[in-house]
Amino acid sequence: MTFPAMPKSVHQFFAASQAGDADAWAESFAETATFHDPVGEAPIEGREAIRAFIKSVIPNFDPFLGLTPLEAHTVGNSVAVSWRGAAVSLDDKPVNWSGINIYEIDENGLIGEARAYFNRSVFEAQL
Image (cartoon, rainbow, N blue to C red; front, side, top):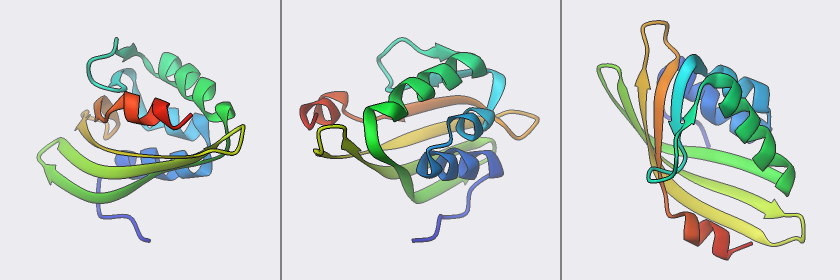
């Protein structure tokens, strides 16, 4: 499947997730970015905290297959992307989830804020 057209940093967000590359994933964010993952949880503040969060998640799966963008809609500096995620837990359970992310792109073309809308309980029930 090819990715829908979207700003470079948002494309990098998804490509890095599929590669399991926490550093490249974090580099799609601005230094002072905010990541709500998911919305309703305490936000993750700053690229380094986002990097640490991503690095804490990926090792819990083998493999972590990442997030696949399905549709992207860009209006000005805002981008909405529907996606699906897939991974296999360390005890060999398939985990599938989906959601919609809203990105605000900063003046440097990086993600300044990302808001992930998905049901964490659906994700956790599969573990």
